[in-house]
Amino acid sequence: METLAIEAKKQRNLELKERLLQLKKERNAIILAHYYQRDEIQEVADFRGDSFLLAQKAAETDADVIVFCGVHFMGESAKILAPDKTVLIPDERAGCPMADMVNVEGLRALKQKHPNATVVTYINSSAEIKAETDICCTSANAVKVIQSVDSDEIIWVPDKNLGHYVSQYTDKKMIIWEGYCNTHDMLTVKDVEEMRSKYPNAEFVVHPECRPEVVEMADFVGSTTGILKYCKQAEAKEFIVGTEDGTGYQLRLDSPDKTFHFASKFLVCPNMKVNNLKKLVRCLETMQPQIYVPPQVADKARRSLERMLEVTV
Image (cartoon, rainbow, N blue to C red; front, side, top):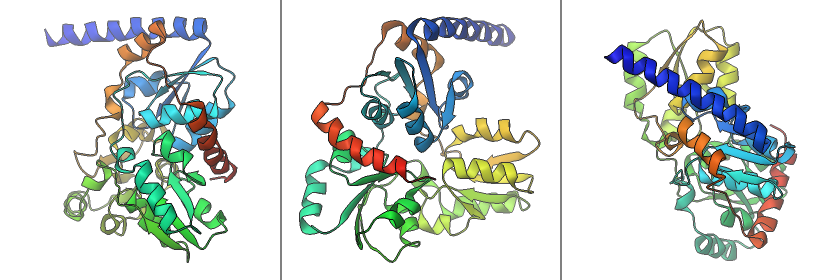
């Protein structure tokens, strides 16, 4: 019975993939998928990437429709950078708790308190927050963005862990918002110690959204793309991975001869995982749900994103 169920699922997925190809052609659509998505989503994407790469693709595409398989703020960024495109997201419930940890009123109050500070906002934020921002960044180019800013004082929102990591690469004063990624912040020193004891020959690679004391333990610290590149090029054959488990798809694809152990079973973003192949097909059939950003917000937010894209990774 189990074998029959597996075969039935494979057949359904095959039919969904065929339908997806048809819809993409009819709609002139492109599918962008973040590395944290389910394997079945990454498999059918036109481009897989981190926030920086996908923002670039959204800004450059000739497609009429962008389907963004990620969380809501990513779809907003795509709409801001490509206002004439239709931007869809398979499930509008795909939010980001960290993005919700900063609010416009609080940020405006902080700006009034520090009028000479430059606001640098992690791309993991809402369009409204980006509209209050001087320049955005991703984990891939955060250090370069900070170093590119003329001001000696930085207001950093919303991720305190990434902010702490970046602060080690600048003499600028950083006023850091107290937000964090629920998934990355779960990883503890104890988790890493237990994994290192279990896999003594493995290198530990980690995302800077993790806690500072965890980041300090790493053999390599980097963005999602940075981790993927490092693991592909490193001589080591075994890794303990300190980031969201969806990256396993690309890690295994890039390095089939290497072994990857995720540092904790809790490194799963439930918001990223709400998207699936069935919802992806349905959103192209119905052309819903669409991402909408009010023009007055989008115009202000676009400047901060475009400045970010000018700072190369």
